[in-house]
Amino acid sequence: MVVYTEDYIQKKLEKELEATFVSVEDMSDGCGAKFNAIVVTPKFEGVSLLQRHRMVNEVLKEEMNSIHAFTQKTLTPEQWEKQKPAKEGNMKCEGLCQTKNV
Image 1 (tube, one colour):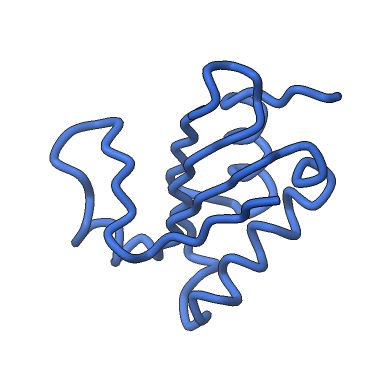
Image 2 (image 1 turned 180 degrees about the horizontal axis):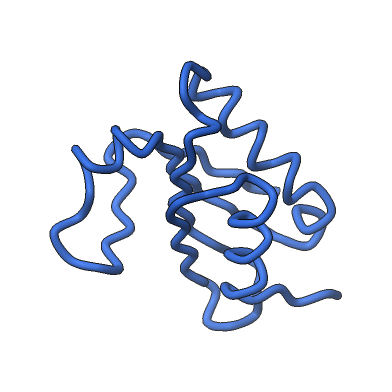
């Protein structure tokens, strides 16, 4: 089984979605099967939440075969500025996440 790291997923999302901010947290104690992510990109402007999640899922299509659970928060830069966590590393979804459980 392929094991993906926070850094690998973060860099892939940054590159493919031209993201201004990406935070990925491995919630699986290092086995690479459960992640929380925040993705901020202008590409989400005018795009529904469902379509945003589909965009992220498409970027990680191959990786999703090995990932057990993936929670994502997808925001435009404007939305991010309004909701930015007070502390770095705060991954609370606040009702904007989607979880993929296999």
